[in-house]
Image (cartoon, rainbow, N blue to C red; front, side):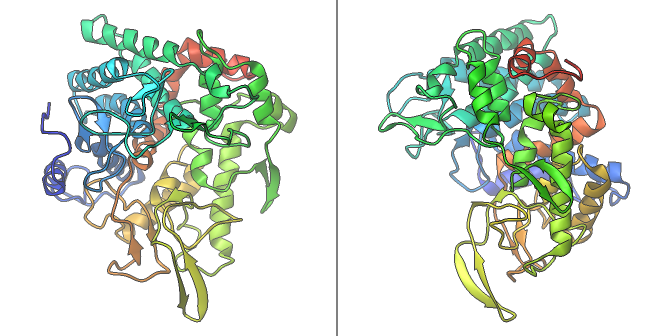
Amino acid sequence: MHRASPRSSRARRLTMAAAKHPSRTAVDGTAAPSSDDELLAFFQRAAFDYFLIEANPENGLVADRTRQGSPASIAAVGMALTAYPVGVERGFMTRQEARERTLATLRFFWNSRQGPEPDATGYKGFYYHFLDMKTGRRVWNCELSTIDTALLFGGVIAAGAYFREDEPQEAEIRTLAEALYRRVDWAWALNGGAAVSLGWKPETGFISYRWLGYSEALLLYILGLGSPTFPLPAESYAAWLATYRWKTIYGQHFVYAGPLFIHQMSHVWIDFRDLRDAFMREKGLDYFENSRRATYVQREYAIRNPHGFAGYKAHCWGITASDGPGYSKRVIKGVKRRFYDYRARGAPYGPDDGTVSPWAAIASLPFAPEIVLPVLRYYHEIDLKDDNPYGFVASYNPTLTGRHHTGWVSPDHVGINQGPIPVMIENHWTGLIWNLMRQSPYIVTGLRRAGFTGGWL
């Protein structure tokens, strides 16, 4: 197992990645991938490599992004823990390597400092959004994040479900995964209200905003409701459902959220096919179908291209939370344009500045492979790899010209964007992570307490 010092230099990391994929043009390094499955296999492996290389194997922390000096993101750690089983099953790493990485991660989070001090790693079982890659302490005065803790625990529970062998390390993984989950005080995060707060800071207390309206917090509520120690009350989920926005867009009836990642994140871990809560029973829908419809809305928006952005078409879409060219106003071909930096972009109501994220389309693969696979082929054909070691560029903007033939290109890869690629490809192929999560009594309890019925429940 690689034991480099935490976060090697960028040049060294790229060299390591190139060694794994000598030509970056083929699954086996000898011929360009041609079939859909070959393309998927190639980009599954490329995206997975992020979690091998952009990590500190001593404590399991994973960099938020490839930018030099980036801190760890706890959500990226959750993605890594979820991706390791995929890596083992696909031969990207050995089971022993995955055990060691997973165990180092869980030991770190269990033993790290929990308390109200501003330089701790977490408090009340939750963890700060960003942590120092070496020390694991809070950085940037960031918030104790409820949603990023939920994404972390998606990975923790997946690890506990995967490592079931009668072997000392795997037994410890299971013990730590359960202990970590049982320590989270979800009820505390309500701060006396009906819905969960976005987070807390030792300097100022709870963030005033709460998780209301359909979002990636679907996973958060299920995890909170399933807790055997400090559960959310069922009323919290009802309060959340009451703030949904049901819309009809381009003939699609669905629970609306503009950024595509919202329709994907909870599905990384949970198979919602034929599962319905009270809201979905009333609508005769499930969240999987809801995400399929949201994916079709993105495609239709790109076809209609109401703002006339360059590149948008039936096989070029993926509008989500992403980096962008940076805030500026320009006149391009006689049209006044406004561009943004990092922004939760959405369709069809915006904000939209012509920035497209290839990973966002790929992560919708299980919902609508018939329209996602043509996008994958197109991005491959226009060479959106740009010599990147981790697959397609994270985001690009063909409306804003630059050094790249496709316009402005993000210089970074982001861990939370890389994670859904290998996992959702695997869920599409085998349902690996979905099947693992079905085995968790906490997931089952959370779904039932949220009122879900049907399907595999």
